Image 1 (cartoon, rainbow, N blue to C red):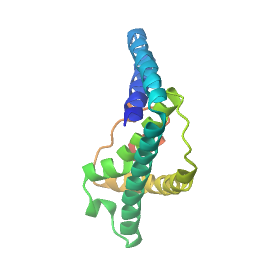
Image 2: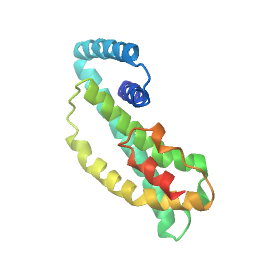
Image 3: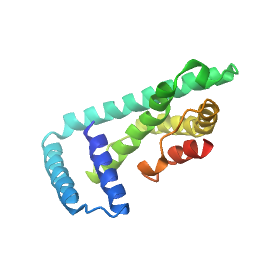
Image 4: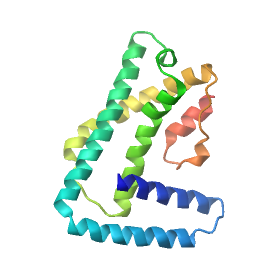
Length: 168
């Protein structure tokens, strides 16, 4: 999804700026991409918006599936780490959420306004379950000595990375 990549590029530039890297050339390139994208989007309005909504629904649906699977294992008093390895937990729990957040950043950058009312309930449901699951999964991964990725390599709004790191 193009919004994801635009959001991630913006986030990388922001983090580089924090570490005092010269980012003006990258910022200009990103702004050119955003202008080009906005023009493209205006020309292909209806088809494009429908596709974006479908992509967002798929991301939320996939994340909900993983979270419900993790929660079902916990309900049976099982360790998440007994059924899934470090990579599966990383992808199923953290990376899908990051896809959604980066896509949101990209939509904001391009001034995209989509009618996501139909997604609001699903987003709220997955956010609630995600917030409950992150500390549990992080603790269980830490008990296995699985190392979480450093939170300073992610945007500050990715609170789950900090939670996972602090659990180690």
